[in-house]
Amino acid sequence: MTYERIPWNQYFMGQSVLLSLRSTCKRLEVGAVIVRENRVIAGGYNGSISRDTHCFDDGCYVVDGHCVRTIHAEMNAILQCAKFGISTKGAEIYITHFPCLACTKMILQAGIEKIYYLEDYHNNEYALKLISDIKVALEKVNLLRKYFDKLTFGKNDESFLFEANEE
Ligand SMILES: [Zn+2]
Ligand SMILES: [Zn+2]
Image (cartoon, rainbow, N blue to C red; front, side):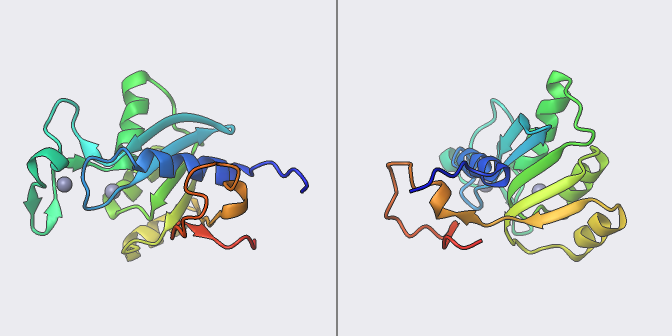
C-alpha cells in the first residue's frame, strides 16, 4: 500500500466533523473551523452561550420552530476570533453543513474568502446569491474513507459522512 498523505480539505473537514461532536443542541450537530494559510485559527460548534444551560440538559428553547438557545458553529468560530483578536480576513471556513443565511452574512462580512461544506442543509437561495455576488468561493467536500481508515475505531461503520474511495 502506498502512503498517501491526507489532503488539506479532508484534514480540515475532518476536524470540523470532530468539533460537531461537541454540540450541545441535538437538533443539529454542526462544527466549523476557520483556517488561514493552512492553519486552524479558530473552531466552533453549535452550543449555548458560555455558562448558560445546555439544550441536552434542559431541552431546546424553541421559538417559531427553531431552537434559539444556541449560537451556531460558524458564529462561535468567528466570535472566538473577535474574543482573542485574530483576523479572519482572507481566511477559509470548513463547515459540516451549508450555512444558514445569518451565518453566511457573517462569514462574508468577516472577510472569509472560501467556504467549504460537507452536507447540504436547506441551502438558502439568498445565501447562495450573496456568496456568488460577493465572489466568495464555495465548495462541497466529500470525506473519503481511505484517508480515515488508519483510525482504529469505527472502521467498519458505514457512516453516512464518508463517501466511497473515489475522487
Ligand atoms: Zn436546542
Ligand atoms: Zn447559522
